[in-house]
Length: 122
Image (tube, rainbow, N blue to C red; front, side):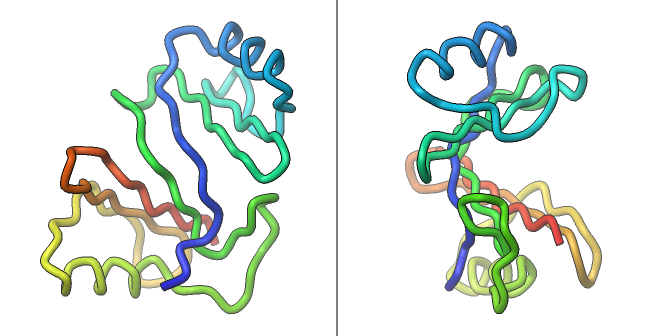
């Protein structure tokens, strides 16, 4: 199963302060805006998403159809195919969004309570 780009999504209290901290660690601002309350930080292939007021807690994130630089990958496993496999394996899917094609997402919780977001943008 091809899950696509991997990042950690962190729920932050002060987005500007978090951006500054990750810059001090050598990350560059790769995407997102203060106005939209999120920033994607990149250091090599490492991606850290910083989200203020969007969700509680932290989660692992995978983006089917994208590589680590948000470049399109083709072919890729569609989020609906991934969801079907996850459900067939007996895991409960939460927060499902999207239609029959194109962008879509879902969350599944790992055995230790960690949310895993599968978020397809195309």
